[in-house]
Length: 312
Image (tube, rainbow, N blue to C red; front, side):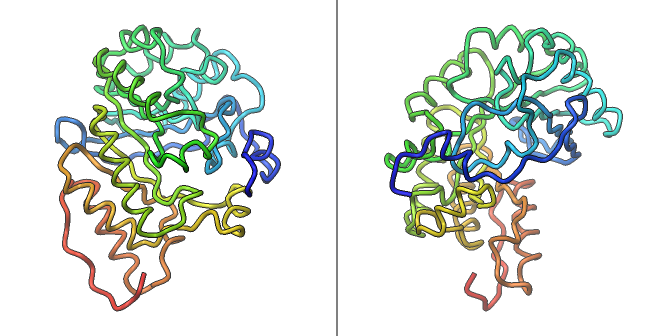
């Protein structure tokens, strides 16, 4: 795909959305994660149903569980209440909404107070947001919370040619300015970093640029980085793969990046292990290697490699 990628181009390759109920979250999870204080704490993650993100990133498939219209007033508090009634108690809550918490058409600002009240039992709250949707209204929501606050933002990559092509509509300068502002307001920041973004197709370059992006994010002041192996499955990514402009990462590449990023000792590093089997061709060692990375997510130390004769 040699031409400039636009919102229309991204949408033209999409399969159908999944039907969702605006009064129900589409998923909720209970897990553990190391927090900024170094302690392992319980986390409730709620995947909210809301209006689709206005930014149509090339690699994104989160739009599948979103609404076409603005989220109705009162829907988000109802979703949170529904999920919390079905989840055990936890120290931390993540509200992930397939886009931007501070997009008023996704999360109505009139619902902030009700949302904050539902979260009073948590010592730390994490939401996700686009770097360009960071504004001086955010501390007002932070002040409604009983605990500390964190915003996760997609940096994706700092590769000077790949980043502009992702249709994310940000620069590294945008990310740094957003992070600087949030840190100055005593709001923690975590960065989402892609391994093997589209338009970067040399395996070794992908590893090195992922690590450079992690280092850049930590130098900006983030407290955690989540490394996400880039997946196809949204329509346009298959097209880019067929045209040689995207290559899926090997499991060994994720392991190398994860090991080296943890060894930087600049902050917490997490490997996204969802659907990890897509990147492995070996049934003999896969489960052990996945378990190793799961333990590294929790312990934040590099563990011994899993020995196997496979090439992946």
